[in-house]
Image (cartoon, rainbow, N blue to C red):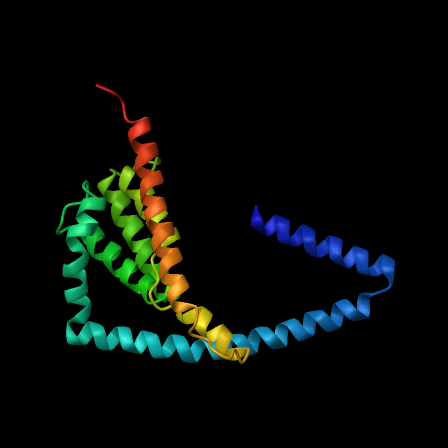
Length: 195
């Protein structure tokens, strides 16, 4: 659906430019945008490589394992249907930790693996289980401690203080995660058969 919206907006923009005789400006904007996108991507690569390297060091040093143990009781409380030693639990924890460090690109494959494991626990049904819905809500809201991608973009645009967003990011993502869990639980208990 989103693809159709983008294609529709592009076609409408081109038709509007042809009617108003501003096609040269559209062409210039397309090439300037492409050049800027490449510049931003190169800037993001350096930051992502740094943080992925830090995650690798944390993994090799055992820090990720310690963080997983620290968050395991909380995750077990949030996902009571998932057995503690099930692979889904490991993927959920890894996904949450990656999101905390603002590594959405690293968190995505872990989130997909977590969903695959949760689907296996659900008996491969076509409807989402309680744990799948909860994981999607938490993954979307995801608490972020270090918003690496946004910091990298701010650095690319020569922000005077690219890291000043860290504290507001922690507060807002924490509140959004709490809200996601509360809303998820509200609808779960509302839908749950009484008896």
